Image (cartoon, rainbow, N blue to C red; front, side, top):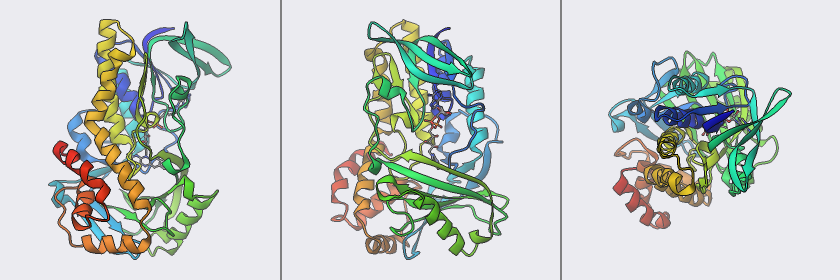
Length: 399
Ligand SMILES: Cc1cc2nc3c(=O)[nH]c(=O)nc-3n(C[C@H](O)[C@H](O)[C@H](O)COP(=O)(O)OP(=O)(O)OC[C@H]3O[C@@H](n4cnc5c(N)ncnc54)[C@H](O)[C@@H]3O)c2cc1C
């Protein structure tokens, strides 16, 4: 088998990379070890409505509900609200992640990319030190797929980057361990995503509740691995649900556990191999959300790969504009939010309550984490002093 590009992983980052590379004329193959794209769902399923302008998904059957904003509850339940008035419209979607991923894979297929399921990459194929493809296992068969370019889109547990010599190991303080229930029969109508903070509730993370409509809610928790112990995420989310006047009566119809990188982004291009999405540690260090950056980064990667295939040049120099591109688009935001995460970790519950109290009637200029961080820097310049230089840069870029 010989392709221009082999993409390992058919999640959002892999499918979008494959689509844009194929649209640019490359012969692309995606391999995924799962038997079905998007299954099992390992996600809170919240995404910003910014994706509407990107034209990457057709139809609406992947949308479960539209959000009007976010409600953030401090440890003593002081409420800070970011609402749709700031965005001028709805602010986000809760999606059906299985359908979302399938729609992105469908778009990749429509552009000409091929997809092999139940096919696991087990190593890189090299010749004279140069990567020439991937070794895969499918059922009881092992074979090689030759490719000029290899894309690591293999998610949080990525091995491909490691095989190529990139330091991808995550420190426990750069990884959130998560547990989530999808509850049905919840007697509550809401168009707001809710976030609950507090060292006792979710050390180094938060509890979320994302409404899917029709009495369904994703209620989950993320805890920093360095502050967690085996079983703690489940124990704390169970406690939260049991004590909650509304969620305690819900019927769980899905349960999942998983992990999200909350790390600094890493090197993403080595010779003729590049990393996208969670494997590139592109998820937001504050929220753990990685869907928008998987889409944005995947598009940049696909377009640059298309140019490389067109020129028949497959080296670091020709692929490096991918790294320059994502750094320009969202790299500053990831670095800033990593710093915010580090600063926030030192805040005790009393400080979080004080911060929430100072923002409870604040008129945010827009619906974004930047707007929230800006308000905090304005109100508490000494507490968040380290952020000031970064804020100026990101304000210029409007991120
Ligand atoms: C509990 C939880 C809640 C989350 N909630 C949100 C949220 O609400 N909003 C948000 O934006 N983000 C959320 N995220 C993060 C989001 O899910 C990820 O950022 C996103 O899935 C990254 O996409 P990806 O394509 O990089 O990786 P993935 O979606 O993980 O896809 C990787 C693919 O690679 C395949 N694969 C892996 N290794 C191999 C191999 N060796 N061979 C072949 N195939 C392989 C896997 O089967 C998988 O299909 C959440 C994550 C978790 C765990």
